[in-house]
Length: 323
Image (cartoon, rainbow, N blue to C red; front, side, top):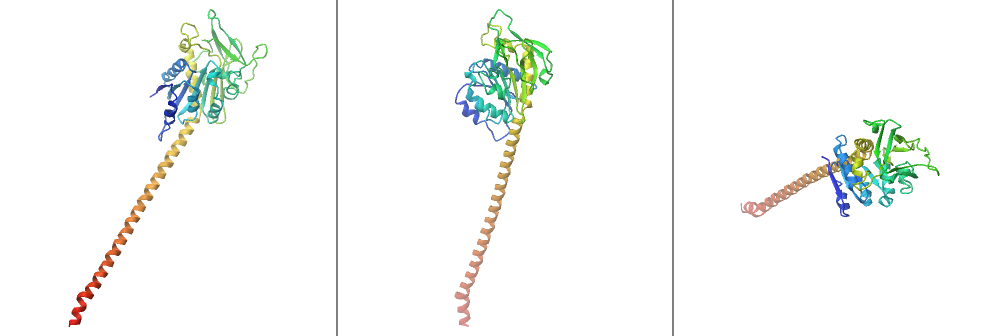
């Protein structure tokens, strides 16, 4: 059964840490959208509603909880949507290490932008975006047009071209704002029709870690506007694109399975050690019982000898002398 939990307190750090069990752990996808968890909760619900993704989801609302999640054995993937630099500060080392361990990561919007996240946007979500197109006028049609560039698992059941509501996108550009293609070594399922830049870029490292960059999902928390995150998530093509991305990123990464195997091995080692100690204790108990029996036998034999000696001295000897 999938479970969604909204973690809001610092005390949750202790609660999550104690979740490292001595038995099997369920794969968990952690979702973060900054201090406003509304978008994260909607994304978590999309994951829960997809029967292909058999994982729990947990919504967190602070970078500290993201750092903690990277250390927990049940964390299969982490999804980050942020609209400001402050919301992802201090996560470079934890997320880089998580990726090197074979974890899955999805970065939406700010994690893809080098001025906001210079390490994340180059080493974790390597889209290396340094400029943007912003559509701030609500009277305009604010969409990005996704065009297929490379067919992958993520493109499954999606049209070749489709529009998604968005307030803009990040991309790599020259001083005049022209797109510079520096992503030949990565896979680009979808590019932006206007600029030709990646709207979805995937990367897989040698350790089995997988990341997906989605620089063109720009949402706001105001329900009255067209680019409200609830309206963006309600688009069928967005839901399919997002869940396909989660499926590829989370289920294709290796960290959870490897950690689970290591945990299973540790559990088996602990069980073997326990069984060995019990066997040694049983042998020691039997040895102690044997030694006790020998001691009792020796005491009994000594008693018999003493009784015989006393009988001879006090009874038999006087009788023999009397005769």
